[in-house]
Length: 255
Image (cartoon, rainbow, N blue to C red):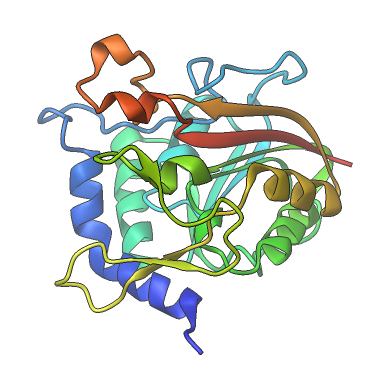
């Protein structure tokens, strides 16, 4: 049986330099690399009315990768900003990004299904494009709930399963929206491992959040390929990619 966690971690350790180079490709020399926070006013879908800000709060990013969300949230004024990821190579990039911005943030190697922090440690949490790589979704959400205090806010964003199953060239949907098994992706044949992802339905994600002890207050389905590009008039992407959402973002409150 394939150990998807081990293979995904090995792939990210191999892929990290190339991935971060792509992420920062449009950053001019001397400019700050992008570090978007899910709690910024210009985040996809904007901020819901019930959310009253980051300043002075303790925050954790689950599956932080290169630390963009952690650094961006620290820059907004979080009292504590911590990123957790299983890839040591990704965390090396995260620490360099932190130092570039000059913010107070900490990065810890760990797994989102066994977060290395005590109960009720944080008031805010988020995860961007990470939980789709986690086989044990229920375990990861239980950990997110455990480390959040009652009333804490969790923003979960994953690639939308409709977008992931779309063949842009033929404008057809491949596979099943109700896929149960992992889907393996060859990122580059030079890497030893493949990336395993789980394309869960929006309903399954919503219900899993509820079962973990969250009150889901808002669901936003982002239209567009990149977070900063949400207008078809400004893009040369195939038209069909604008007919399905790019990502699903859940705003949930710990009960």
